[in-house]
Image (cartoon, one colour):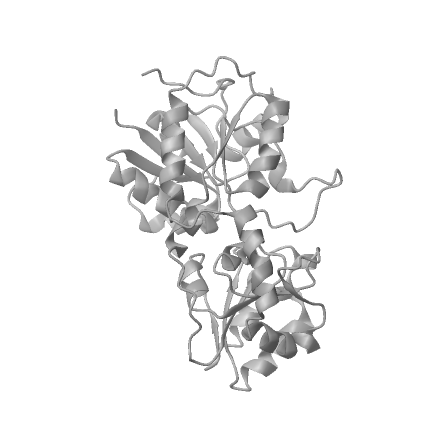
Length: 359
């Protein structure tokens, strides 16, 4: 039977997550539409023809499966609600309860398609605790285009990619000493720099870094990072989840003031140390590369580029499974009200059980 999919997003960075899923859905002969609940995502979707403009259109579409790259999803629309995640477990900082925000259960999803053992192990514990959703490890759609990995160092001038998160106290983009050091290094003609910034970073900070553009420094206004990953020798970052994506290539990462002292990263906390650490990273130290291997196996062990296929097949299979043994989802009155207020759509309708279509 043909299925109707909805890819539900908020921000532009979700497009590279949804695009491989869209490709897989269309290859199967099924239907897929997109919807964004925020302006940034709506702007990013303007180039697509298969977009639902309003929440009323979403309700009328009546999707069978909703693939969600957001933290919540309207409970009043039809479809199996599937969390496909908008990033890897970045380990930026734990909450007050010492739980990373990635593991917060908000009570909206029927299925979690996890990326690898590091997330699956925790979500499996939460599955047993809450008993109103299922967890299946599939790998992550966003990194499908990264495979197969071509990890040969180029003979050109070393290419360094700079990426930053949006939280000011964790972001290198807001650090004046880092800005001045990169400006200086970009004028030495020793390196070529590419830079991408999180869409949520304020425009004044983006424009400041754009002002550095020269023969050795290029600012990229894009959320499609994989082509840039593939042409970069090393990454310079802070706590952004781009670190985890980049490491799948087994290329070194220099991290500025990371919250945790991970042994698979090269740590630096002073801008004056950057040139030394860049040169060390560009040597591809053997002991560091060896430490990246077990990290990858725990984060995302799938190297076949077929995670999107696993996600879609898992969703379709679970759509037809008997779920009568599951508890109802939490009542969640406050969160449900906030969603309705944000979307300007008020209804008493709410799906408390995972959506099911009997074969």
